[in-house]
Length: 422
Ligand code: ADE
Image 1 (tube, rainbow, N blue to C red):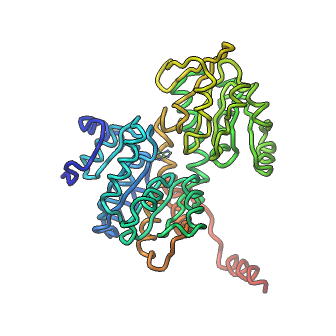
Image 2 (cartoon, protein in one colour):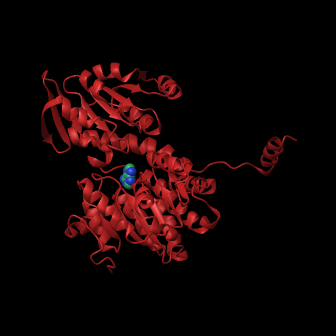
Image 3 (cartoon, helix red, strand yellow):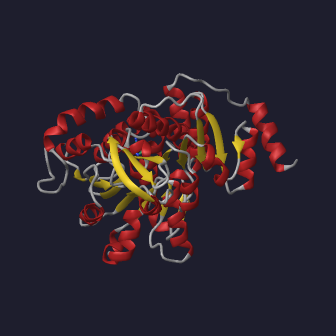
């Protein structure tokens, strides 16, 4: 069964059994992706196509990769974050014939060497979460470009990076922005990040959140999800923002909004989801209360200024897994959860399967679309075709047993007359 002899770097192949079991458990809650996989098994749209994926190596990702493989693809995967890999899943993937390069807690050198290993398979399609794979390919391996038909990108940060590359004329193949599908960001970013971020904080700390002041930095889809879940657990939720429209939305959603300089003084917990640099900077750190806990759920680990935390503190110790305490000269102690990396994937298991079902059905269908259409596309970032987005929504509703109305023929005629202005 294995076609990946020596084509892997995982923690321990002996963990594969546990990985297979957990992958099967996630699959039960991924009915849309299941239907896509079943069609791929019959139609084999990826026969002989080489996929390079740089994704969080989780049970949900495993189901995506197995669906691509069922469609005939040869798949290699590396982690899109040094802390997000589930080692048992990586081992199970190797046993399933997927070249996996991912170890939880890998250092930066190993992380980038894993990207190199995946690129060495000479991909025809890239699948990225954060754009590290595509940027490495463009910066260091232009010799691979002629064989690449296109790619997909999972996350907001990755889409933003790719749009900059495209605007500067540097993106050399088409990429579908899976994040922009409604059935991705409205569910994965909001309900997925909302639940899994709280899950990560709770698993790491086991602290009660009821009655505590919980600050959410950034009120995009992820911030909305986290704020609403923290409120559900009884926290007093404060939002910080730089965008006036989003700040107003947070106010109307019933949250207190204030600058970070004020929020820092009252926060028991601060979570960053801004997509920007140093939402918690040196000034904020200087104002934190004794015992404040900091976590990040944005893609990169630079939303909290960790070098400033290291510089300003006089001592650091690990209190329990994913919980580091920094002590300052004035006696204050501050907690950093999961090293400031994605807390939901570092300290918990990422988004639950039911939302990844939609994100990864979009991934699989967008990869099929870009492969079919790449000759007519350019080095640009493309939206997920709306038919795919709507199909994913329809299939998800069906799987939930939810039926909706359809317009009658007279209603349809009325709507098209109204649209054409007649
Ligand atoms: N991103 C957030 N949650 C995830 C998960 N469970 N699997 C893969 N990528 C994710």
